[in-house]
Amino acid sequence: MSEYTGDAMVLGNPRGSGFRREAERAVRVMVAARWPVFAVVFLAIAAVAAALGSWLAPFDPNRQNLVLRLAEPITAGPDGGTFWLGSDTLGRDVLSRLLYGARVSLSVGFAAITVGGTIGIAAGLLAGYFGGWVDDVIMRLGDIQLAFPFILLAIMFLVVLGSGVWNLVLVLGVGQWVTYARIVRADTLSLREKEFVEAARALGDGTLSIMFRTILPNILAPLTVIASFNVASVILSEAALSFLGLGVPPDVPTWGSMLAESRDTLVANKWWLAVFPGVAIMLTVLSFNILGDWLRDFLDPRLRERT
Image (cartoon, rainbow, N blue to C red; front, top):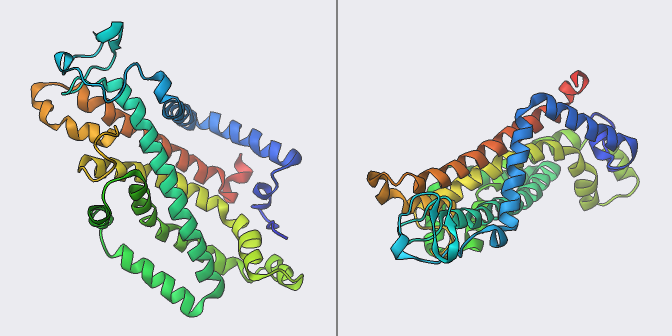
C-alpha cells in the first residue's frame, strides 16, 4: 500500500521493466536537453576530485614555500613538482588546495541537506497529518526562523559554537528545514484523505507506517528537486561563511577561505588566487541549478506525455 496509483507510480516501482523504461527516458531527455549532461559530467569530476583529492593533489595543501610565494601558474615547484595553478601568499599549491576544498564544499553541502531534509520532512509529515495545534506550532516556528536573515543567524550561532565542520553542517542544515517542512506539509494535507491512505488505515497500518511508508514515497519527487537546488545554496553559504572566517578551521582549505585570502593580492594582479576558487564555486552551483531545473521538468507528470 506504499505506492500511489497515479503518475508517481512509475517512480515508486524500482524494479522490472518500469524502472528500465524510466532510466532510458531519463537518459533520452537529458541528452536532448544537453546542458544537464554537462552538469552531470562536471559534478562527477568534482566528486572524483573530492574523493581522491589526497591522491590527485601534487603537494600537501598546507605545505608552505615562502621562496615560491605568489608563483604564477605552471611554475616549477620543489622536488620536481609543478604549481599548475600557481601558489598563494604562503607558497602553498593552489591546485592542491582546490582539490581538498572540493571535499569540504561537497561534503558540507550534502551533509547539511541531509540534516535539514530529515528535520523538515519529519516536521512536515507531523504538521500535515495531524493538523490542529501541531500544525500551528511547527509552522509558527518556521515563520519565526524565516523572519531573521539566515546569514546573520548562521554568524551568531557559529560565533557561539565555534568553527568546525560539524558545527557548520548543523547550522546550515537547521537553516534549510523550513523549506522541506512546508512542501511536505502541503503534499501531506492533499494525500492524507486519498483512497490508498484510507485503505492503509483499514488494513491496520499504524500512524508512523502511514506517514513514512505510504505518504512519504509519493512526495519524494518535489523533495528531490528542492534538494538539488538547496545543495547549491548551501555551498554558497559555506563559501560565504568561510570567506568571513566563520566556517571550518583555518588549516582546512576551502574555496571560500581561498577567496578570502586572495583579497589583498587582487590589486597586485595575482588573478589566479581568486579566479580558480571563484570559477570552481560558480561551476558547481551552476551545475546543481541546471540539474535541479532538469529534474523539475523530468519529474513533472504534466510533461511526461511529451517525452
